[in-house]
Image 1: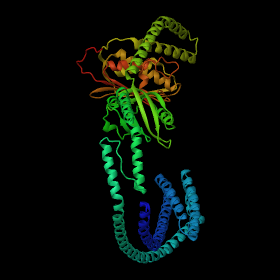
Image 2: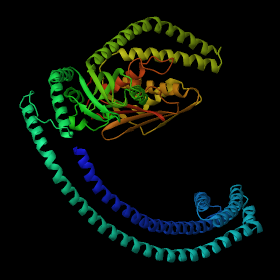
Image 3: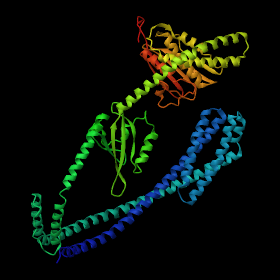
Amino acid sequence: MKIKTRLFIGFLLIGGFVGLMGIISIFQLQETSEHLNLLDDNLDTLKTSERLLLHANKIQYYDEVLTQSARNYAFTGDEIWEKRYFEIEPLLSEELSGALDLGNNIEKSFFSSVNDANSNLVNLELEVIESVKNGNLKNAISILESQEYKSNKEIYQKSLMKYLENRNLEHTSIMEDSTTDVDISLEIIFEDILFGISFLVISITITVVGFLVLGYFLSQSILKPILKLENASKQIIDGNLDVKTGIYSKDEIGELSRSFEFMLNHLKKTTDIETQLSLQHNLRKALDESSIVSIIDKNGKIKYANDKFCQVSKYSKDELIGQRQDILRSSKIHPPSFYADLWSVISKGNIWHGEICNTAKDGTLFWNDTTVIPFLDKEGKISEYVSVRKDITEQKNLTKKLLHAERLSAIGELSSRMSHDIRNPLSIIQNEFELLKRKKILDEKQIERVTTSINRITHQLNDVLDFLRDTPVISKKFNLSNLLSKVLSSLNAPSGVKIKTSGDEIFMFGDESKMNVVLVNLIYNAIQAVEESGEIDVFISKTNTEIIIKVTDSGPGITIKPLEKVFDPLITSKQKGTGLGLASVKNIITQHNGTISVKNNPTTFIIKIPQKEENDNSSNS
């Protein structure tokens, strides 16, 4: 007899007993389940009753608050009651909606009629509020005293009072019935549990004994052949692949022995697997040594990071593992859409390749030439992503420096041209224009248009020349407030532009001519931003440690992202600008050991310059 036949007979006997016990248990569980369902039904009924009672009480309270708010607003005109009314009215509607969703058809019909009465009252009270707003207090009071309002109010209140009285009585009855049913159900359930525990202990005991007896008889026919197989396994571990088991029976153990020997023959044919594994190990080691490698799961969390990854990111492996890949994102360089596009590509199983700027632990930026490869499981679904990177930070920096040098070279050529080809003709134009103004040949609009055009050309020319001048800062004490007044007078802002200044008369140490360039650029840019009409605020102040200058305009804001790039040379969002004005401003502020920042909504430039001591007359370069 085969082992499986012997096992089948033994398990059949034990299984029959266990099945019988299971049938008995099922009937017992059904009885317990019925009592539990009854308990749940009682609790649901009680809960529904409580919620309906709570809704009715809140409806009564909110109705009184709305009525009192409308009356107080009608008699006093105080807007606080109007505000109170519109805060409570949605709450009342919410409670009515909640009540309509509960209860039987009779209760739904009742709350529906209450809701209709409430709608009539709310419409009348809204007329009262509108009359008060229009100054017609007499009409507002007459609405509140009208028969229509009183009738709806009386129906509303009497219905609620009657419902609350009936609901309280019904709720008390439900509470008493539920308490009795719960006590009975719990008692029956407790008895069922005790019976079930006793029955389970007996069943387990009989089953264990049956398995022990069955196991003893089976072990005699299975243990000896298994010991032979164990001995053969030990010889294989020692390197003997020619071992024989010596088991030739026709039962399952004999079949296992034959399979064992077949496995030995197969093992001899696959000894090259170790060589393949070694090759894979060496390839991975070479990749780790030459590239920045990380593995992330399908949810974007880091599973693996090699030493080079830790080296460039300045994070340890413990800090990286389990974190989202977002920990390295540089929002200043790449917009959210960049990462969304990347994820869209790889989440579809496609390989993504491109350049990414990441942020290290210390805040520094580093650039990577990156390839992200999705790996699939047996079902063809993405299980993880392998990212292979090459550090190109130095290459990027060199490219940036080269571009900057090319820009400066272009600016130098441009300035030489502008100084010779524009400044001389511009001087002639200005002189001729002054003669025309004296002869009063032009009207005011023509004069303003020509003046604006000349100022724009002059400003752009000065932008270029100021940026290229590398003169030292000659610090001296001067009146910053007077300088601001002179700048405002010289700019000839359009009549529709309102410029406000604030702050006391302030003196500062610095280079007056360079600070003139700063104020001209910032205020001129603000005038261009607001175009023909708008407001500009220029605020100067002084603390114990620094001078603060703020220039704010009501224009549409700066579209360049990130905002800090507005200070880079040749970066501008204006069609008529040079892109050098703000770069010159930043250079001058830096020469004064100060800082300049910008923010949007509204556009505001903030300058902070350290305050010099009275005896500090030294020049700073």
